[in-house]
Length: 222
Image 1 (cartoon, rainbow, N blue to C red):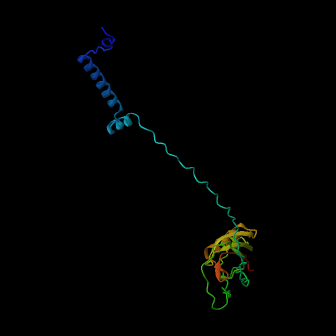
Image 2: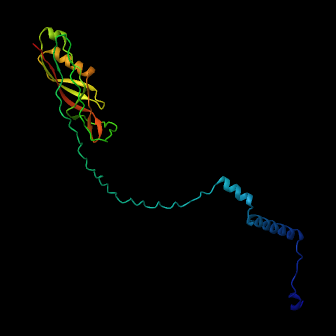
Image 3: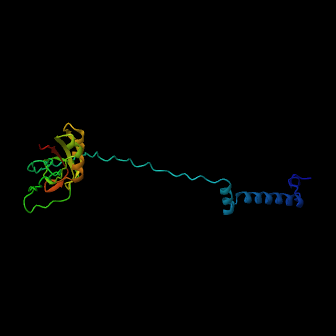
């Protein structure tokens, strides 16, 4: 045999079954890789979000600094000057005197009405203030001698402190100096409250309450 004949290679035929098995394995691997790398659908992502919700982070801006208002200086209100009240003093009039007469009756003292205001001055509503000290004129001052005091020969003068309202009516009477007889003191208080009337005191053209000292005299005539 020559060397040329020995150089010819011996070729074997491929096995069909082995080729088919290798092809199937390659195809299966490719299918697995394609399935694994395929993107997931929207339904899959929604399901994941429902199972594991993603927390939302929001940034809250810091509050703006509050600037305090400037201090307000409070100044006291000025007090207007108060004018002193003008009291019109009345002319003092002699008080009535009770004296027994022959018939046993007591004369009534004459009533005088002094002029308190200039002509044309009108009186307004009363001012609700503290009563003023004044000497008041009498409008009506009936005075009767108590019968028992007359029988017992009691006499004297009672000095009363009388509070007169805006209409001239006595509303409160107290004894400032007694006559020495309780019967005469009580009689004077009761008679002044029941029947006496005064000219009201006037301040700035208005009738006001006033306090007046009123003497009441009980005299015996021989």
